[in-house]
Structure formats: structure tokens, C-alpha cells
Image 1 (cartoon, rainbow over the protein chains, first blue to last red):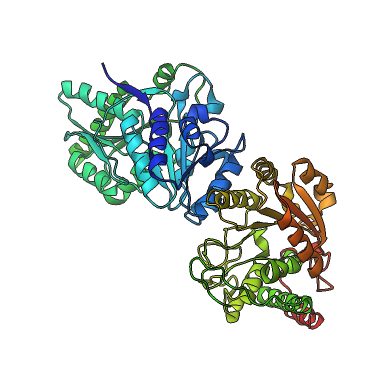
Image 2: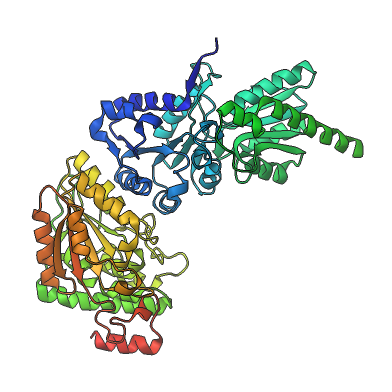
Length: 318
Length: 284
């Protein structure tokens, strides 16, 4: 039986642990603490927890004020509201002065499901990655979430950490340690590379395992840090496999695919295919939506076959 | 200025007399006009209206140490209406944070004196500003920190009256009262003008006092261009316990320069060489 835990649950538990160790850690929420799981921290440290009500912009600027005075604020709400609803506040009050604020959002992507498109954040990474100096992290499971939150607390500077709503399979061993700015190799193979984030890392591993049966060998990279991105890992993957597929639960524009493509275009142009969203989705069960909008292991397999075809045409041409 | 050890309150300079403060206000006005004139751009109107507010704060009310700008027990001044950067720079200069000759670098490349304040570049600047509406929220965070650490500092936030159009100001007002932040003091520079005209015509924010009162703030009114009245109001505000105070400071935009007073054209326009000469003569 595969163990499952949502990344938001892992976050909530980790915050309590960090709160016990470090009195500088304070937590803010905007009336969603029972969903973002910051309520665990609120219960144990009520004096260090600030529920700002339904006022996300206010929360972000308050967090900036606390950080400028030496606290380590974690501010949480749904990814549709942050950074989207408070982009100006994040930009001027946090990104420009480089303040030590940790923005951790939950309920990202279409896997939020039935609530519909108003609640499906598919542009948040594009916004967060647009901010110079921001560390943008998308953990792939509960273990990586816990470790990434610890690293965020210990690392001076602004963070955006993107978490999800559903329970997801644990793919890392308990002793795994997240390293900021370093891709993690999940599978090794010489034919193509799949670079994935979030819940699509597991899908990419499943796709690679299926392709293996057809004697197609894929490298799978978990690119959990989007900025600063691990350029070396991308270039080396392009070198070794000559074909790249990216996979993300986000719009293509400004997300993982765009970031990887920039690195590939600059350093080692190879054929690329993109598994990503191209439009707003709709209400439905998470699995139904992922299937409808092309974010499954099967979709990644198709993209690999497509990129391999382009790779072989290039070879024939040369 | 005497500098502090980490746990010693710096002995603030001997308080200036009101006459000396009025002289200083005139000098700061000359500095504002001159620096904007040299820069060729900037915001004179809303800088000139706030001069007495900053002089009262920095030369009578606040404790701070220019040799140690991040001193943890300092009182904090947050300029939320960031376009009034020149009045902040001129005051920080008078308070000993900046050398006087630096004022003429305003808005020039590589200067520490950016068009709108940046806390990472200029000593004494607490918050980066320029996009309106964020300072009171930031001040709530700074005041919460003071309470968490049991420090006795006060947090002063200067807002424009036009700025109060921004909804975030009222989110912050709600939060400041909710958390009973009696060491948070807001000052509204109520000069009655915003870029497109009189605030009452563009977007009426009155009655401002009743709005803040209904948000559960302690509300004071003051003649914002009268040093003594501002000092009295600020001293009164510090005595308030259990809720934050707002001082509605009635001011004149462009105060001190006849052709800039109540003239929205000088919200964000530098004086010409001719106008600069005329303004400086009026401020002698």
C-alpha cells in the first residue's frame, strides 16, 4: 500500500515543529487556516499566529512589516489569491526589498477539482517566477514539502512555495533532504528526459516505467526549484538524451516549460515537448480533470514518443 | 547626536524650540524645492504639505539613532505616500542620516535617493514605497513585532488623503483596531488634493474622521502645518491606550510656495529655473 499525504498536511505539521525550535517564526493566514493547515500552528502558538480575515493584500504587507523587524513570517492562503490578488504588495513590499517572507499557498492547479476555475490556480507560478530574487519551489510530495519548508525557514530571502489540496503518494524516502536550486534525478535513461514538478513528478515516473517496457529509457528530473533553476541539470540532460519533455499542472506560459526552454535554447538546443495547460478547465473530480486536460502519465508517454520522433528526424537530417 | 550602545536609549539632541523648528521647516522646504528643481522631476506639492508633520516627529517626538539606523528600540516612521520622498530625504538629512550634499543627487543614476523611497538603499527609510495603500498594513506588522518582543517603540505611518481611496488602507485600519495596536499612530496628510483634482470631486473620502472612528480608532484632528498643534496631537496620541490613533492633519498642498499652494499641477511637476528662484525667495 502506497503511503499518501497531502502536501498541505505536511506543511501544517512542519510549521508546528519549526515553531517549537524558532521563536522568530510567525504565521499569517487569511481565513483559510483549516484548509491551509496553519491551524495546527495557531493552536500551539496563538500569540504568533495572525488571522488577517479575508484580506490577502493586507496579510502580505503585514508579513512584510514583520519580516523587516526580524521575524520569519509564513503567510498562507489559496494559490488563486496569492500572488494573484496581492501581486502589487508582493512585488513592492517583499520582492523589491528582498524581505524574508515565506509565501506558502495551497489548493494549486486543477487538482483542486470541483470548486471550478475561479479556484484553480494555473497562473501563479508565472507570476511568482516573474519576481527577481524570489525562490519558487514546487514540492512533489509530503516528504519533500516538509524538507523544503525547513529550508525556506533557514534561508534568508523571499520564497513562494506551491502546495496542493489532494492526498498524493509519497515518492521520497523519509530521510530525503530538499536542496534549493538542485534538480533530483528520479529515473535514469539515455533516450529522453522528462522534467516535471508537483504531482506530475509521480506521473512522469509512471510514464518512464511504462516506456521502459517498450525499451525506451527516460531520465526523470524533479525540478522542484523553479527559480533559481538548476541550469546545469537541464543542460546535462539535454546533452545526454537530446530530447526533453516538461510536465506541469500549470499554464504553459511562464511556468516550468518556459523556464526549461529558455535554458535549452541558450545552451543546448534539442527538441522539446510540453505537457501543460493551455486554457481554463472546469469543475470535476481531480482525476477526471487531469485526464481531460492532458496531464496524465499517458499524456507524458505520448509527448515522449513525439519528441523522440523529432529527435530521430533531426539525426536523419544531419 | 550621541550614539547608543545596544541597550541604551540614545540621548536625542536637545529638543528644538518651536521657533527653531519653524526655521528648520523653512529650510526643509528650500531643500525640497531645490532637490526637485535640480532633479527636473518629482513631487513638490505633497512633500511641502507634510513638512511640519515630519519636523514634529523627528525633532520632538521620535527616538532614533542615525548612527545605528536599525537600532531595535527606535521609533519607526513609515512614509506610505512614497511620492513625498523629498520631504523624507530632507528631514533624514537634517536628522543626521544623510550628508547635505547628497540631496542634489535625488533621482540621479546610482544615487541612494531614489525617486520613491527604497529601504535597501537609504539609511533611515523603513519601507520601500511608491505604490499607494500599503504602508498602514506594513505598519501593523511592525507594531505587532513590537508587541511580540515587548518593545516600547511607536510606529508612525504617514498616509495621503487621496491614498485613502485604496481599499487596503481600510483592511489595515480594521486589523490595527482588531489587534488593539495602541503603539500604531497613523497621520493623514489631508491636503484635499489628488492628481486629478480635489479629493471631494475625484473620490470623496469624507467624513474621514467618522470612518476611522467607526473602524474603532482614536481620532484626533490637527492643523498639520502648525508645528505646535502637530506636536500636541502626537503627544496626545501616544497617551492613548487600547486602540490605535489617527491624526487627521489638515494641511495645504504646496504649502509655503504661493504658486504651488492648492495647485494640483504641482503634484508631480518640478519647478522651472525661474519658478525655483521665485520659490526660494518666498522661503527665505
